[in-house]
Image (cartoon, rainbow, N blue to C red; front, side, top):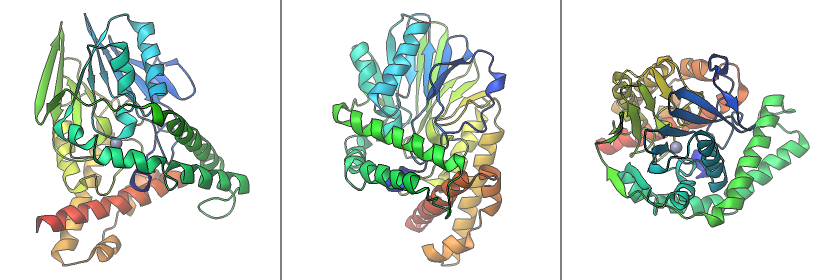
Length: 363
Ligand SMILES: [Zn+2]
């Protein structure tokens, strides 16, 4: 998990929190944002990091509650549940997992235990992955090469003040590693008690929930971040909860789990839903679709450049040199060294690799 999944950013630097008059500070690691009547997002606030926790959304209906994603640990899920209890005493009826990565599912049991009747909904591939690839990844994360090694390496760098870029660290790098260690240590401490709760309803296209006056449309729009990403659309409120199809400030791409060659087309379908508020899997609530359009351009360019490289008969190593994403790195990472590192590793690195694999597999 760590090799491909380590460098996911949770964004606070681009967060336009000033525009959210109803934001309340819940803790240093997350905040609750009221998006509209009855819809509240639990937004993670850890600094841009090498490992990450995920956003969670609470949809309070007339009679019941729908939860979208349950964060990286039971403890952080319990924090989200505590926030829910401050908002309502209504029961959670549905829990939707946008995909199978740990930072979106590890808190499932908290909601199952608190609401034994709750129904879990995910893509059919999520149900397949959780006990197979998911289990392998969870074991790997707990092994010496996983989080223990990761924590030791970061602690050593902090102790020696040794930047990964050479020379001493700046404040951004130091704060990032400190946060990464906290997330990893919490995962290590809580993982042994985690029971994986599988979805009891799976979909491969669309399921629509009707609860009172609320309509919640769960859609599969195509492959992207994984092969089982679903989005949760509230058409009347024009709110879209995207899971990791949208990650800000730098999209996370994994190899082999992501499909960057198809991600752009999937995002075009997502944009066609014309949501006015977009809640990403990581990063702040987006009030327009400009960031998603940038992501769609990025993945369209990766597809076009990798397809061209494959058509020329290039190897993966040759494609890594010929595909040029510098312009996009400037857009997504700006002047931040940590974001540039993430972009290089996971968009240019894993992204080109995964797109190349898919493009050559089709031949
Ligand atoms: Zn993910």
